[in-house]
Image (cartoon, rainbow, N blue to C red; front, side, top):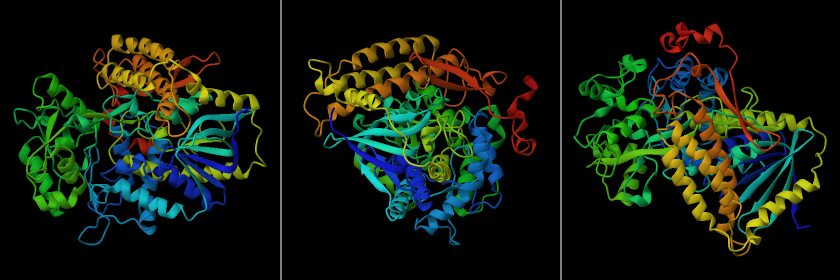
Length: 610
């Protein structure tokens, strides 16, 4: 049998972004022996890409803000398909998590009175995002890493987890390989926290880096965990679209939060034409109103709630840009123009330093003098591992999930800024509950040798195959297909074609050859990622085909209207069957309490249609 090294830890955290680090810190603080496994280098998490801020009702910019309003905004933004229990926990605990970060050394921007500054973001009633310029995620990771390295956790960098193990139905460990030297590693664990982020590398135009291949979702699915809401993929409205080498790189929503205007090729500020009825009372009707609102925010004298339409939820803005393109009013390279140059240049450089340098260096555009060209980019998956809202435990005992790897909080569409606060709120809960569960288990469960031998053979297989297809070509074709057939606008015919295409791609993937040996072999790594990419793509496609309506991050051109009576009340659940097939079912969350229900917009709940 091929050699492998064995490690034993009470809690294994897979993923080293905000959720993983926060979980590891909490589990370590409780006395658990913690291992953290990360696919890349520590510090290269996608959390770093979250530039705009972390949403928490601190009420520093507007005294009217509260957790109740944050709860309402989150539920409304998610089209009422989110788990109201998670939305309540998140809204109530986010302020404490932000204050905790400050106590740990996070340096947030300040108001003139010395309070944590907060900015506007799409879907939020009040300025709510605590920020550090446009590098909030970077500061969050810096702070958590600085805190975490002193807790005693063991970090395994550049390791990819290939399989989770269960013994008698309970999590018992995982198997990973070292990406640099190809060595194989068995991790025995009493509990595991999945904090592996998202799946958006499955699309050709995406804001995610190479790591975002959905392996966390697939790992949980392969051992029978329930996966929910996979039809809901958020296409962030503003990614760079020129030059081609940077296509998809994120342009923070903070640009619009600071007054950035979206215009088409005719110079029209088109978002005024796309305000949905459910948001009519909250957004400005004229450019004069919108500009006055920004002036009030800048001066700190906010007196109105009517925001610029550029701050509508991401699904609405992304679809509006798409519609302008389809109507022949696109920018030069097929998107829209985003203009912040009307504001004072020094203020732009101060508030958005990252964006200023990003466009100057990558596109030779000075955003203080000229508009940016932007367009939708696959950015975030609302779907993920279904978890208990109070513990973050999945349907597999001992397996926990937090952050983008889990589902529940965001419903059909995530509000900008809720991702960072999601990580630290539910990362803490997952780490705490995983450590408690681990403390109740004596010793480590045995893992079947045949399962270990099976995953080793599967992991080494691409190295042994010869004359097979280049895995990079299979991945390229997969991403192009998902972009064209399971993208921002979907139809029954295209989704059915996509399922057939995925079956063909799966057969091609089984025959890919990596070439070379185990040391520094990117072809090998890519060959091993394809299986997860195909399965998460299939989850998304299957769920999208079955949901015959448009809602949030899911748009069906053949079913353009939301069906509030049926689809607006149920969530999809995908599981792996005994025969290996993928099945889909539907479930509902428990009825919301009357007290919390009273916080929601009665007209948007559509109860009269029952």
